[in-house]
Length: 493
Length: 95
Image (cartoon, rainbow over all chains, first blue to last red; front, side):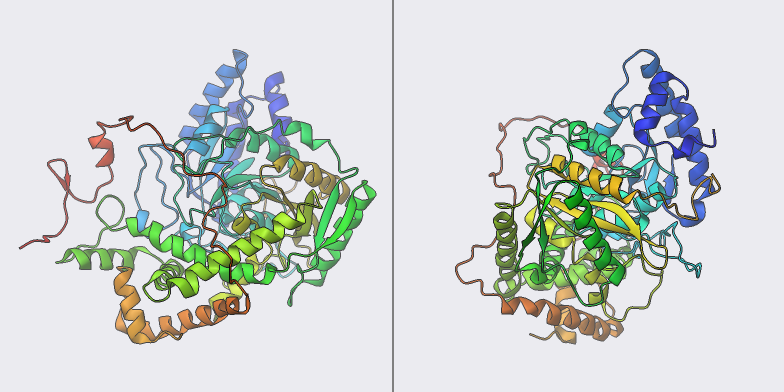
């Protein structure tokens, strides 16, 4: 039984089908693991009864020969996803106690495929943050530590998801990625995270942050597990008008396709001041791995890269200020009573939103306000087109693009930062894919000098997640990443 | 384009967030830090570039104009802070 947490999802699926383990045993082991690692604060709620009842159903379906592709696999859910009958708060005070009467399309797809819900996972408030430090539930902690034993952030905004999967407190987890919120925490926690093409996963039932950028995606410990989960999550959904009617190919076929003859771009602009030299070295090593596996590495230029972050920090807050207008104390969530309707709105939102969320709503309101709309918002949208054009041009001559996932490894919790812009720089390598709507995967590829994990990012053409899994698998095999974090469940095995 | 206390108060009002006066100065300085950095975009020549609002490449689909859902008053009101007779209750807005 001690090995049960070491199984990949693919291995667990095989063991469940052979009946060497049961779904209830697997769920029980993960519930215990979540409790064992509770000091990491990566769950905001473990739904043990719910998990055991879903697992019992899975065991019945397995016995009846009706197993789905995720049958019996324990999955953690970012608290941004609405789950029917289970509190869903986006880790914000303003949604405390909100119990959705409906299920998000993505989680419904996972349960339809046989997945077992373990609980809800910590994240930055309304997914606004890069360290999981803006959560109303307090920060989630990275299971990895450097020699000094200082608590590190798991990244964000899907920090609880990445922390739980890395700590073996969940076998898989959902995340959302608006500017890097899946890929950056995956890199910080030494696991695999994929942001699909915009439109691949339905946004219905996911608390909205920036609707033209938000995408749900999977976290897992291996590339093969990630492809399995992605297969189950994606669907065309009429309830999301931006959902794409594009058939998803069989992703398992991509896993062993290799990269022979593939052209992989290396963008010369993906270098910045303050980058960890180990990140630069790992990027070069990654290029060598792909070359050795038969890919042709191509020097490319994405000239507007440096403008992606400032454009993002206009577009995302603008969309957020509009999306978050719905939290007004009238229909759900927190309400602070006041004499007038306006003061009831104003006091409710002042008490319910944290500092970073307020800051972004204010920026968004400002850039959309009369007199500034053209100078900021339309300007940012024009730059967004140039960024997308850069990628369109690059993908005429390459099949995939290799970059670092993050400029550095995970940083300490509570690192004092006077200026919010410094925190925003974490997303420098991930934001461009959101602006262009492209899929991107982060794969753990090595450790830095402090023994902390680093990830490589692969970007692909729209709807070509399959190529990302082919390249990701080659990186995974070449890296042979087998290091494990100290603060994980069953730590000694 | 620099933001002062008065502008912060105006934005806060538009955003319906009651920001106490003692926080306005600090917020103005934080917002200016962000806006100064965003101003980097002025270096980009965007003449004759169309704004990009959506990357989907397809227009918004239209559905039949038909009722597909409804009769869910209890669910709609399940999370409401204050309700009466099947309505949302808010402070008095008309004297």
